[in-house]
Image 1 (tube, rainbow, N blue to C red):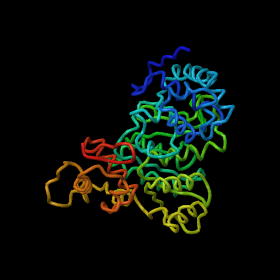
Image 2: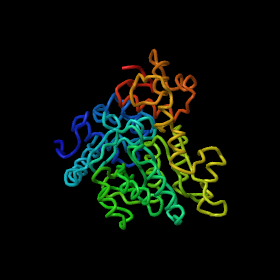
Image 3: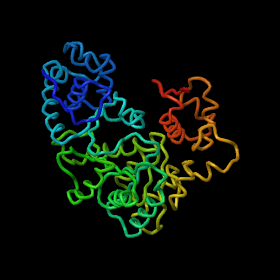
Image 4: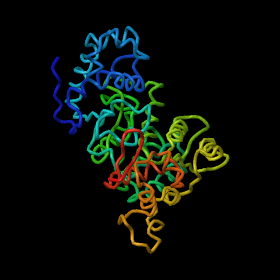
Length: 377
C-alpha cells in the first residue's frame, strides 16, 4: 500500500511510512496510548507491529484476536490513508511520540498521546509553558484576575496553554493574544470542526503564533469522555498549571490533579470564601496540591523565573541570562544522573527540576538520555 504524501507538514525525524504506521495504530478501536506504546516496544518499533503474525501479536498483553486480525489484515493502514487526505487538505502537522519534535514535557508522561495533530504556526518546544484554566461559569472577578495574571506573565513565559472552553479558558487565550504571548488550545475533538463554535474567530487569531492541538482524528466529536484526555495534555505540556476559578468538581480540578500527578507545579487563586466558583481553588490549596498565589509575580517567584531574584547576586554567571539554579544543577551533574538522584541534591520539587533541566537542554548545556537520565553536553 502506498504512503500518502503530506508535504505541508513539519519536517519529521520519522519517515512518512513510520508516521502512517503510528496514525493507523491510534485509529484502531481498543488500543489506548499505553497499550500502543507497549505494543511498539514489544515489536521493536513501528514497523515490527505490522510485520508480526496474528498469533505473535496475541501473545502481547492487551492484544486480543480482534486487534491482531485488524493489524495483520491492513485495516489500520487503510484508516490511516483516509486520515492523511484530511491532513494534507488542512495543512496539519503530525507529531509522533518517537519524533524529535514531539513536546519533551509530554514525552515524560507515560500516558502521553502516541500521536498529536497540530494546526498553526507556533512551535511546541519552548523554555517556559504555563497552563491557565478555570470554570466555564467565570465571574467578572475571575475574568479580571485572568487578564491581570496573563498580563503579568508577558515577557516571562513563552506560551500560555488552555482548553478554549467558555469562561476562564477563553479569557486566558484572549489575554495572551492581547499581550503578545503565543497561545495553544488543546481540543477534545478532531480538527475538522471547532467546539464551542463561538470561539472560531479567537481560534483563527491563535493560529498566527500559536495554534490548536488534539490527539483525536477527524470525525471525533467532543464527547464527554474526551475532556479528561484533553486535560491531561494541557497538564503534561506545561511547567506550571494555574487555576483561576473552579467549583468543587470540574475540568480545571482534573487538570490540576493530573499536573500534580506528573510532578508539575500547580497554583491557585484563592478567590472569595463564599463564592462557589472559588471552592475548587480553596480545596486545592487546602490539600496542598496547589500553591496560593495572588498575582503573576507570585508564580514567577515560586518558579524561579523572577529575573531580579535570579540576578541579585554579584557572582559572574557561568551561563549568562540564566538563574543560579542552573549553575547548581550543572555543578552536581558531574556524571550521568537520573531525575530521582538529582532531586534531593538540588532541593527543588520534581516539577521545577524538570522545567529547569528542559530549559538547560534547550540552551544546549545538557541532554536527556533514555531512562529519564541527564548528562552534560
